[in-house]
Image (cartoon, rainbow, N blue to C red; front, side):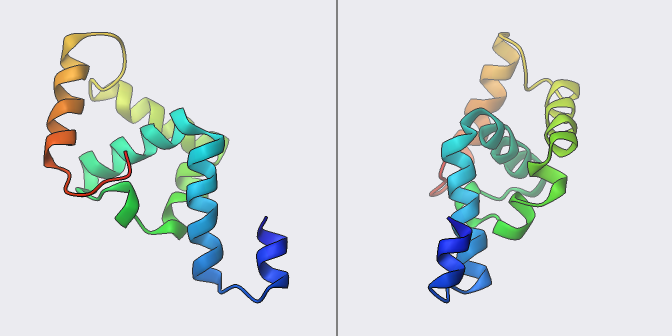
Length: 100
């Protein structure tokens, strides 16, 4: 996809943005977790998150995703408990026009 975009003279910003949303389609659980971390730590909705940051090694690599998942687990966002549901509802209620 990115090669096709490059051959059509797409800008780097457009390519990063496309990669961000394609990752959300290909890896929905991982990007939901990334979106949750971004909202919880930076108060940024997925749609407004910097695409270069979202597709960076910090979030979209194997080790980056492990770090995201570990942060969520350490802060009570994983598991089937009611605490997780309350926290996710609280995050969801604060978003204005988020992707997730």
